[in-house]
Amino acid sequence: MKPLLIDISKWQDNDGTPQKMNLKLAAERGVAGVYIKASQYVIDPDFKDNMANAEEAGLLRGAYHFANYDRTKSGAKDAEFFWSIIKDDPGELPPALDFETRDGIGLSWIKQFLETIKSLSGKTPVLYTGINVWDILKDSTNAVWVLEYPLWISNPNNNLTAPVRGIPEVIQNGNPNKPNIWTRKNHPWTIWQFSYVGDGPYYGAESKGLDMNVFNGDMSDLMAFAGIGEVDPVDPQEPSDQYIRVIARKKDGQPGWLMFRDEASFEYPEVLAVGYGVTLKLLDPEPINGLWHIETARGRIGFVSAGKAYTIRV
Image (tube, rainbow, N blue to C red; front, side, top):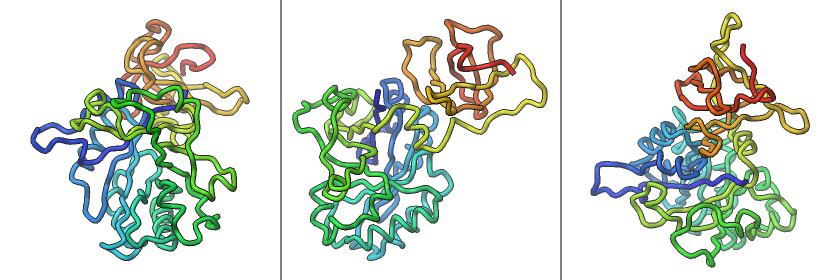
């Protein structure tokens, strides 16, 4: 199954109420990750709260910058401003550039931004765009360099009736329309924004609508995209029965992932993945419903499979 992602900003929050978006509810209802607006020409006022709340909810997090040429005139300056906001906690997912306006921005501005944020962050950033803005850029059909950057394509399915919940089958099994250069080079998409009319309140937003996205892969692919197994491993000095280590492998024998749940049931939604080699502290000496009750190095408590092919005591 392809994971569900959402993207949010201050517009999902009602300024007239004290609370922010309920991202724990989003996680409980199947959201795997969230892209959070950090900046445009100013800092998004909900950015830090949204990042902290998403981390507490166990969601994979990424930050994005909305491109505005008229305020800076420089892709590098925008990238530096963006990085100054997110550098202390950029999240797990690669940073993203949201290019959806045609206010003077051209290929050179976009390339400059992406190259600068890649240099600053050490991660290859994501480019969010749509056919209607990308394909009208001068020389965009020949800009092969852009294929280096993962594509987050805005291509909503207008046949989906609001409010949308989950990933409809037509999306789960489908593909978006891509701009010319990606289509001509048969280059894959990474994230597909398939609807602007997600059920906001259902996922904890105070807005009626919510942007809905699907990741092009499964949960283990999403974790690999984030570049993490889960957290920094605990490394006990001596073997004991107080820890387990993840030994899960993929079908080809390569290191794999183990799904983490908040409740002791395989029926409960998977909220993140734990990477091969990660050591976890046992909270109960015996499995509960076939799952170990564990604590991660960051203090998150949950459950992972006790199957012999997935974990060993250490």
